[in-house]
Image (cartoon, rainbow, N blue to C red; front, side, top):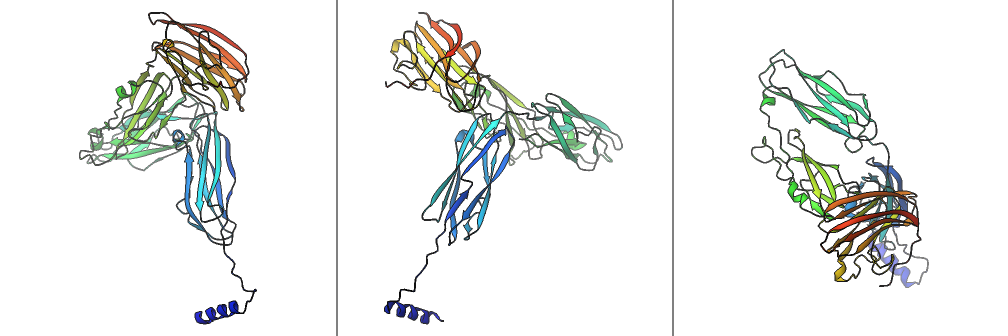
Amino acid sequence: MNRSALIFALILAACTGSSETTVKRLNPEIVIAPGLMSFGEVLRLYPVTQTVQILNAGSGALDIVDVQLKVAAAHEGVFELSGVDELERISPGEYAELELTFTPQEYVHYTARLDVESSDEDHRFVEMDIDGTGAKGSTPDIKLSSGSIDFGLVAAGATATQYFTIYNAGDGVLNILDVRLEDGPFSLVTDPAGQAIAAGSEFTVIAEYSPADVDSGHATDLVINSTDPDEPEVTVVFLGGDGGDDYQLPIAKINCDAIAANTPPKTVVMDGRESEDPEDTEDTEPLDYAWTLLDRPELSRTSIRNPTEPAPELFLDVAGVYQIELIVTDFNGIASEPAVCVADIIPNEQLYVALSWDTPNSDLDLHMIPDGESMWGCMDCSFCTPVPGWPAAWGTPVYALDNTSGYGPENINVMNPQAMQYYIRAHYYADHGGGETRATASIYINGELIDTMTASMNSAHRWKIGYVSFDETGEGSFHPDDVVESHPAQSCPDC
């Protein structure tokens, strides 16, 4: 039937009042499975991947307009979503799959949300909640004594020997799965492939360079694959001949003074952009950056955000010493010697107290109560009243950090405290599965660490840490109590 005939037939049916001719609308219907994605407990730094299915349960084609993974800025990179670029239209009865990978960086509970916008008019926006927890376990961590080995000038037919060391800086066994080295003038005397390096141990790799000629330099990569979860492949560059003697390594530089000038809690930008590449004389090739937080204060739970960027961020969550390393790699794959920054972050408040603990899913809270006031009262500096209305003669308090998901830290600062006593308390407010926890508190007076104390606590326990007293000259002293007792949670005051 041609188009004109079809139109005539439809008009005729309408004129005769026929009730048998109907037009069925084709509607898409979006369904996301699973409705909730929970990764459970995953060993820190180990990636786990699960599949998200987006189904079209309707009768019409389903167009995917937008897909977004919503994650807190501090947890960027913990959840990674793949397959979005290929996701456009889903036919009726068909489905598409996305891969969601969870790689916990710390021993904390993480949450995220997947938002999908589609052409389903009844459910244009659908969401899927995501969660997972970083769990303690044995994690290896591969470190190399050097990223490059220079054998120097060697006569044709002669052999030179050099070595480097593979360290396991983690707390689990490091297995070297295999190594790759192209055939040529370089060879391995001791092959690390198949080695199991215990935590804190090392393996020495001995290599030889035997050039058949000395007309030009030689360079090749030794690639090492291991069970290190966040760095499964590392490279050592072998150099020999003319190319080795004159090669200038890149130079890593950290603006350490800019980091050390800050006070906690504060997010700082670590600047490595002054790093140099002497071999790139025209300044056209970018350097690769690898930042590592070698050490942090005992109460700190921080990590480097975007550690492969020239100027990544670091949240200085508590006072203490942070040790930061930067290694840059040039366009030839040659790594610099490590640049290390040791920054002692000192509070500028005269009274500074921080609290951390060793379990997830435990909500501990810090309290500071001036002499003569009561805990849970309006003058108690806590999560209830983060900036209580103290008289100016008492000083200026700030509840600077609050953590409800586990580990901490929490922090209270008092600027210009006066000649009185300030009582320090920790309270186990809620147990969401963390159970018994070991709490640690540090007390700073006038920028100096006075004491660090620990205590075991269970839910509805209060730890009377002690009190700090100041005299008229501004000198302060800490008087420990160190008493753990039952103390049920109370409601926040209506101040």
